[in-house]
Length: 133
Image (cartoon, rainbow, N blue to C red; front, side, top):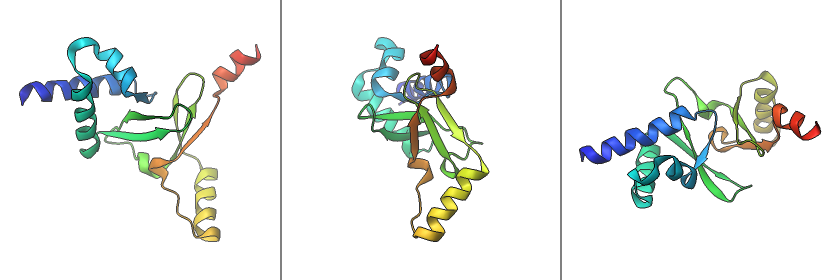
């Protein structure tokens, strides 16, 4: 059992060290090298999600599940997320306009957005500048 705990710690460390990104299992596996099998990785990811240490969401662009480390102080379920299609960087959207938009959707349309599952895809400022330049 101790071995599996160490593997989970290694996986958490990879996600924590890359907390500005969301990573799919293939990307995590590449960082792990041969220290963890694919089956073990998927079991560990499932357990870590159940323990609310990581967050899983489906990326429509890549047609794959991606994982993100959840900081104990971060309230990822209380805001929207932005993800750059070019560099993969993940942004936490904390702003009054998004809160107002979500309130409008709830009040005027009787629809409640699952913020922890909502990802807005696009191109970040840095990648946009590179593409234009």
